Amino acid sequence: MGDKVRALTKKQLEALKQKLLEEKSSLMMNDELSAATNIELSKPEGGDEVEQSINDYTNSHLLRFRNREVFYGKKIEKALKKFDMEEFGLCTDCGEWIRFERLMARPTAEMCIMCKEESERDESNSFTGRQSKSLGKVVDLTGMMA
Image (cartoon, rainbow, N blue to C red; front, side, top):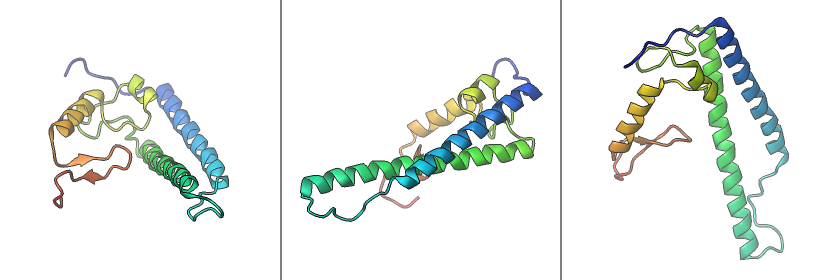
């Protein structure tokens, strides 16, 4: 697998925790802004089919972005809990330390780059059992129950 990655230093852990807390704070501010943005699901008065289509399209995108933010918020919470359990930075697949640079780029990463690349190769080679990147749910492309 190459050279062994050392455990994260206290200073690195502090920087990563701060980054996660900033991401969480940013999501909370976005949540307040999106609460002010009212998603109108009913047909606008006096609106024609084009206006309704535009409204539907906009609402669909707003809901999609909101779902992604909720999912990312859960990943942030999970990462912060790992700090409490002193497991932050450990690959869930091989148990080795994840490189600091990877965690700075993606602080919610749960796998080292080697395991993640292998996982993505396996996923792309498998017609069934693919997972939604944004919702983490298994996607059945065969039409059969998984």
